[in-house]
Length: 419
View (tube, rainbow, N blue to C red):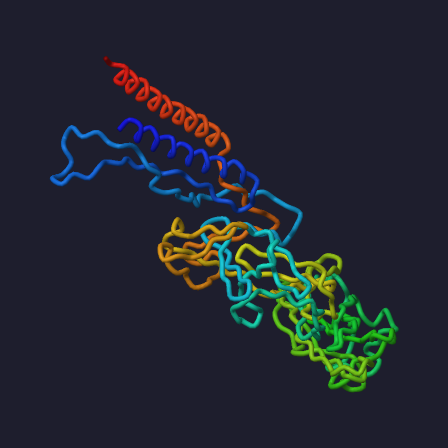
């Protein structure tokens, strides 16, 4: 039986070299998972069970098992290259064919679908919450009118109080009279058509802890107009209300619930604005006036500038107006038995009976699924040094099995030559 044993060893060694060669050939293949040759010994069947002194009849390749360990992550210059750091697979579709991959080299096709190099579409959740092929809209971001304003500043408590009426009357304030107010600042607002409007705020000290606030508007046409629509009291245009501070200089209260901007004041045909202010971070200290923080929720129309992916899979569009919007979310799937997946080439696997059905598509980071890293790809998990050593071992195995055949042949030749 030495010939059969040696032959089985040669076949096993050759198969092992095939696996090693395939691993080495795919060292630079993104998302590739190395395979391992699993050997098993072979014994002849016996009617009454294996005899204690029975010799085996060789070896066989029991399986070529895939190794789904994590590969190294390397950065790229493509923001849509995505690596999975942990468990999970990308779900890819092409017509009715569904496959799974660890290769996250994606780009947008002409219709905005996220696809790989073979045109397969990545599965995800749209901005509306629908599951399917992930598509990015190239449409511009619509403008958003300003409805909230948060303004932090310090008013100089050392200023002398103005003698004014309560409420103010004509002559107590004028934007054209610098001595009628103590401090001023400008804030950009946006109407519903995305036109920039400049709101000028004026602060006038009326007592130790109370400051009156006035406003005027420089509209999109460049004209300075008075705020209208409830912003006139006793003939003083632009009066908004007052702010009261505590004895320690911190914000206490304000009578300004809303800053009204009439449609006529905007001059663009857009609807009137009602801006809710937040002055809670303002202070009244003995130092110079200065604005410390400013934010408002309006913006102009913007065009899509670039697309990035967050670690939890959100595909985010960045627009020329500085706005970032979620355009969809990449989802991942997992399998109970990843080694049961059937490789089909092009860095793809198909589900099989052995792998079991995939879990429902979920967001990265859910359960045991890994997170994503944008601008990064997962390299092959091939240990090149180990593969080269394994190749030497497989070569020696092949030589040794060939030697057993040669030795068996020599013994048989001796028997044939007996006289």
